[in-house]
Image (tube, rainbow, N blue to C red):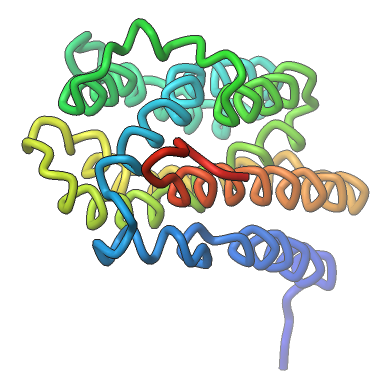
Length: 239
């Protein structure tokens, strides 16, 4: 006999639906990304350069997304999980290990200048960063957490695909570390963010709003990486 409270069962179903809508936009569903991972892209190097240009603004702002989300968190235990994530993003306070610095090592390995890519005006990555910034700054907590959860749930597996693809671009090991770190860490972060999101969603309305935000951000993230992986010689990226 099932003795779980009905409210717990309903909450479980709600969050299973959020997981499902996010994973329906898994980066591995992109045919272009699968080709890149196999080494079958028209030019692995061009895709790698597209990744550097398009994703750097998003990577640079990710810690700011977290900081904005933390400002809305009233649950202290849940807040601690985000603070721990923010601490990791800052390399456990080692400036050489800050995650944007790891990404800059990737950029430099391609022979590009990170300073020229930081703002990324006009790129899809900069537009995505601006959208997530607005969600996380405006809150409330359940909306900000839904956006971050979608990103973290998708990004770990995406980094595995990108690692495989970047092997065909001839990068040195130090240029790959960002992707190795996130392939594992973001699985843990996604689990933590799910815990935070469950805590923040106090009502069915909250859960429906979280579902809508997660769907929007997952779709935006999928389109960003499909665009990156579709880059080919003579055209840096395509819609």
